Length: 448
Image 1: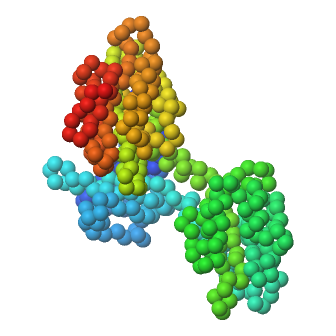
Image 2: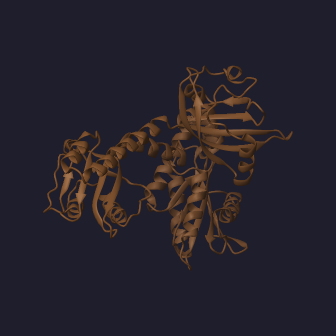
Image 3: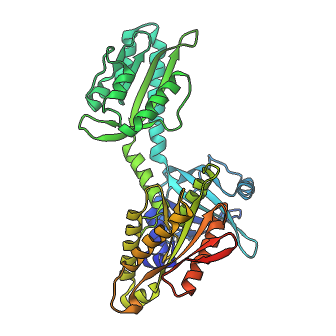
């Protein structure tokens, strides 16, 4: 997070905005808590600052006694792997239990003392949802056991399930849809339609999800299991929502599939919340561009997936005279300039170009498959954006951009190597009078 943005929003506000509970505790016999975020206190129903209430002679205030943890061994594993993610059963102030996912790291202070630092996410509702799915699976398994004795009894059990259920018979091509299925989606599929044809040629499944669900159905039939069995289906009101599909394929003695049973759970709210959290974690809060960490990871991934012979360019851009704008016109105007520049850069480059804000007034643009000849044209585009970002009669308040360019693979094989060269070129442009760009090729800086 840039220093200026941190001062604007406040670290606690940012932590609270992203959700989850952030904490830090000593690696001692009682796990003494030394810091906890406001969202941490809310999660456990304590008032902010009640650290002394949470700490005690034994670590039993939050930890559940029926989930013993060897913290010494856990610390050793964190040192080995960098971090650990685990499920924890914890206790609120009211005495109620909650389940959390905890991402835990270990920090060592200058005096050698160790601290566990982590982020907690409440997954109690998710576990309840999974428990409900298991209950639905038990209903289906019970139905399977009864199938040989009475097909009618099987249908009755299926209809008792609260979630939509489909049962497809591969041999007869009969498709049974439970009453909740018909109520939710308002459709019926006859044997003449064909299950796969109906799914592919109708608008029941969201267009972008069709190839995946077709592939997953074939995986189901072959006995496999897709990694993300979540798709968007159109409901009876015409709205697309996210649903999780759990399927069971029954086979005969020759291991040929005879029927497939699937039950469908609405996970739209949970899915969109997770997508929103991911979006916030990956993007700069002010501009919506990628933040520093995400920019680094995406560029390294793009380079890793590049075919041999690829040529890419990394641009680093620093706003000239931006401090004057903040000092004379205030940080709100400075933020408006930043947002305006970010919006124009995003609109003038391709969707698959990687654009990030890595500092208060610093940006990077990574262009895939670009020739050296086209770099000047792209640099001219960027300079025009910066020159027009904040027109002022006072020359001291006008902004421009100093740009440095490094090329893959000759200047570097990863983001950090490329950034070091591009940054050096950018400072050469700034030292030459600003509002210019320089390229770093091989071992030398080149004036353009």
